[in-house]
Amino acid sequence: MVAGCDQRSSRQIVAIPLNRREAYEARQKKRALIIATISTVLVVAMIMILVPMAPGWEQVKKSFFSSEIFVLSFPKMAKAFLLNIAIFAWSAPLVAIVGLLLALARSVRSPALFPLRIFGAAYVDIFRGLPVVLVIYLIGFGIPGLGLPRPYNSPYIWGTVALVLTYSAYVAEILRSGIESVHASQRAAGLSLGMSERAVMWDIVLPQAIRRVVPANMNMLIAMQKDVALLSFIGPVEILRQAGIFKSLYANFTPYVVAAAIFLVVTIPATRYADYLMNRQRDARS
Amino acid sequence: MPEAEPKLRLQNVVKKFGDHTVLRGIDLVVGEGEMVCLIGASGSGKSTLLRCLNGLEPVDDGEIFLDKLDIAEPGLDLGPVRQRIGIVFQSFNLFPHMNALENVLLAPRRVLGKTRDQMMGDAEALFTRFGLAAHIHKYPDQLSGGQQQRVAIIRALAMKPEVMLFDEVTSALDPELVGEVLDVLRALQAEGMTMILATHEMRFARDVADRICFMDGGVILEEGPPDIIFSAPQEERTKAFLKSILV
Ligand SMILES: Nc1ncnc2c1ncn2[C@@H]1O[C@H](COP(=O)(O)OP(=O)(O)OP(=O)(O)O)[C@@H](O)[C@H]1O
Ligand SMILES: [Mg+2]
Image 1: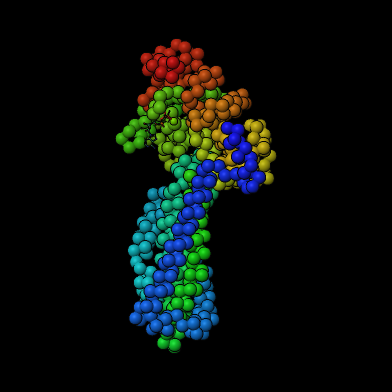
Image 2: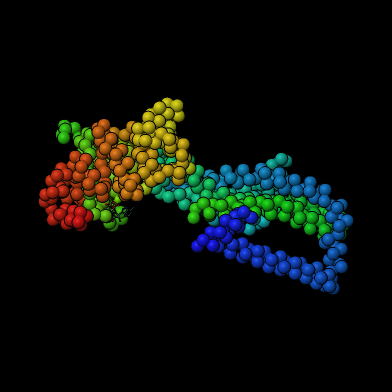
């Protein structure tokens, strides 16, 4: 007993004292770190040794990892990526608004508004059931094909419409699940004070619902950010199309690697942040 | 009790959930300023009755008169009725994304069109009166159960209701917190609020209620002053119920 106390106080001088569990966990953590480091080094080393031994490596290296072409193409590629960001920047708020309206349409209770619910359900089913690229083709080629006059046949407009149609369906479903996760007693509390259904939704249910689905919607936005590249099929010279142009120009695939690198610079921090929000929310709830 | 003009008069109120008839014809008269306690076994329909009175559950048959207005009328705009009849729930149901003050101000602002400044005096007075002046800006998860329940009561009172319904408002509280909420109820009774309580606090019901209604199987089987109900119940079911809880 006394000896134990002594030991404790003597260690306190050196550093923050660890209790038994903390000491155990620190040892475990150190071990895990060592194992992870060794295995990472091994895998990387194996790739670096084995891949160059493959018969086609020299060819692949030249056509995918040419540092010369990387440098040559990078500035224009980065500039083309600004167009991706711009398209994303004006699509995202539209997705949020349309998604919210759809979620509200699907959540109305009044029997008189039943057709609105049906519409919302049909919309969500259709656009979640189609590949994005197909929606982009159909709308991006189909609607301008009606012979609309000049600014209204722009692939920017119809590409944006296609993205918004698709992603608002996903966002609406996420929001609706959030709305449904707010306990009925919250609604009852609002109604019992004389508030209207609309005020209850707006002031009580939605603020709670939106908070709960922020991480899920972040993931949706990240997915959309990547899918902006699909608009390359209908015209806009965004990063993927720019890469295609360079590929033809230099007869080399390195620009695609450049595009991949640029995407990752944006998407990795964004997904990490979404994961962080998700974990924080889970911890707060438990 | 003043029998002149009843505040609430229920006639043959029937409520069904699908095939399950929960209220089988409730008759009840509540006078102005009266405190009525509903007692009865779990599932006897106490909560359902209170929720019907506040319009949270539509009734299937019968009439509920609030003064001269039949609030059971199908299709009636329930907003104004709910302003006049406040309800407090067992589980508080505060809005977790708002602090105590915002919880209280929300409905007066949205429903009565009051501004924050107009309401501030009233709200602060209520918080002070119920010992919560220091907690006005705290969020529900920073308050104890007893404090949350008092905020919920203030939230209902801020609408200046004429009748207050309380559904087992102390059942979710730790025993040492029950007293502070019961004190609030006593204070409201003293100022003449018309109240209906569903409660398992038999001591409290016996001490303060003007009348006890024993509910059983969806009807009010027996009612009367607390002395009579607790010491000389007439019905076998009442006797059995009281015996089961008072052992
Ligand atoms: N929304 C609902 N849907 C279906 N049945 C319900 C609903 N609400 C209540 N009931 C049923 O109505 C009956 C009465 O319930 P109620 O909650 O009114 O009882 P109570 O007297 O308040 O009981 P307790 O003392 O447990 O609170 C129960 O059988 C219950 O299952
Ligand atoms: Mg109940």
